[in-house]
Length: 344
Image (cartoon, rainbow, N blue to C red; front, side, top):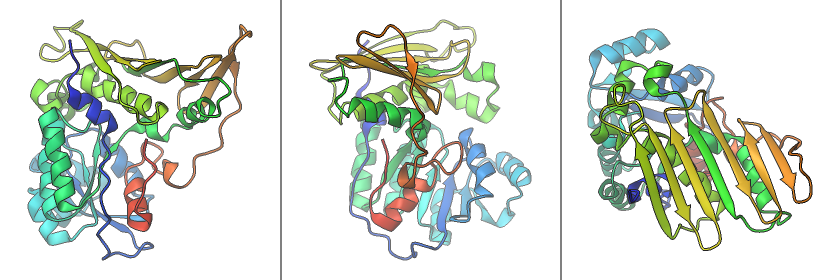
């Protein structure tokens, strides 16, 4: 099948616009509103929020009162910061940014509301469920003069930065092939919460299954490694290997991005026997393979053994993941301070 363009946009789109908010000083906590709690990564953010003096949650907009109550109790959050409506939360909190933990279908609505209030947005990947929604998000961001960022966990892997550095020091020649593996046994198999599972397995709310859930990582990484060059063609094969578990969405996908002198093969799956986020990059005279967040293995022409490379130094500044899980809040703070952000 031809891969929907929106998936590639979900891997590529970073909307640069003029920075306009000046009401907060660079050393004051970033005032954020959390939009939605149905995305399971919201709990990861809130767990680390306790140790982030540079952030202040001034509102949480979640229409499900039971879910709000569960989060309030779990993380010791005050009832007064909860709202059932994002518009109401923004009107009453005067926040600097919104962190979106809604289903993917609602990303467009969140951005359009935030654009009216001139509030920047960071959302969990991917960007949108359709090309139409992606363009609407772009239009809203430009009209409202706001930044829209998509958070990818692999942005904060120093192993990926090591691969990028090695392929850009010209020691292995041009990139010829990129193979990205992402996924796990499946959201139901790993026990994601019911509020998360219900929309992850809904083709309207998620855009697809493993194709959208994990395919976007590879699109993002390939575009970064190819210095922003879009592919000439995009093709994908999807399968329902477990139709009894996921009757409405794909659980297996292979995506091929074709460039004039290179290919990127993205393997997105809810059928791996274990969690995976790793990558192989092949140049003209060698290869580098990432191993989890930190390790890389390098093999050069004439040497049959893949050798472990010394670890890249810890990421710093805008590259750094301060949550230990993802960079939520870090890039938004960099926008407020400097007008740019280190996002792949």
